[in-house]
Length: 384
Image 1 (cartoon, one colour):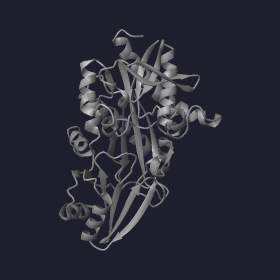
Image 2: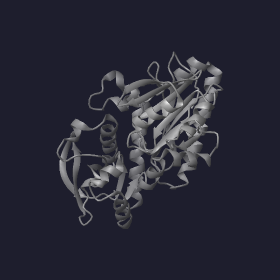
Image 3: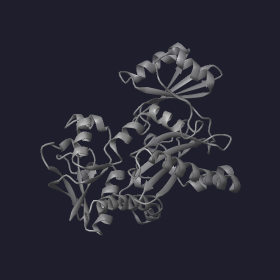
């Protein structure tokens, strides 16, 4: 049986079943089930355990829903869902060495590490999207820790975001609201919100400097005044996935908690069906118009990005907000998205009967397409 690799931050000291997020566990289980139909299976391991001089690496395979420790040859084709990749690889062979080592041995990693590196920098992503459509993404700059720069952004609108260049799940984001000259700051971290009042722009800059601490790589981005829904803000997460021949998609709307500017599920947001929310907010005609616009924008942007690595982008997520003119604005791109809706919260091993329609709507189409993508790459190499 041929192995397809799944790269993640796994430990050989703790059983993955006990520590994996539902998004990754669902991927491993469902991709493994689909690959077994073609005589393949998933081999789950961490890049930090690779020894450059060795052909084999410790990891896990699934047997009857349980992870079994084993050692296997490093797979030729790999899906990569590691997070904090550079920090992880610093514990092992190092990021650049892994890239060069994989290229020299013909080991394929999807999405390509260089693409993840590019999209992982929010400012470079902004510059890239400018080449697709200048007005799609709100104006963004590298944050210079400058009062003058802060003044320019705050004067230009009522909402400003300061985000880590390589942030994740909405953590360590700072929002600044300018309400009739009064500045209100909110710091988001670990699912919690800290609200702070600032008497002056200089006070706000000092508070931001304290909150950002030693993390100097931030961006500053114009906020978008968005359509509200029941006193919450919302965004639309579109996950594009490639099955080896064409793009597919799923999408969900994500509602923020009350008095929050973030709708990330990790920051307390709630996932709902996009169509239902848009029909409630906009009515039938405008909702249909926006859904078609969402499809066109998502497929167009995916095709544009794929030109950087033709045939090598397996999945990518876009976060859109809807402005008050019913226009779509792109606020984030993610190359390693969590599974939509229920797939982010519950695993195939503990789902209940009432969850099955949500798995059918969001999880199964996504994981099945990724399995077909990886299987096609194996076939192309004459494996499986």
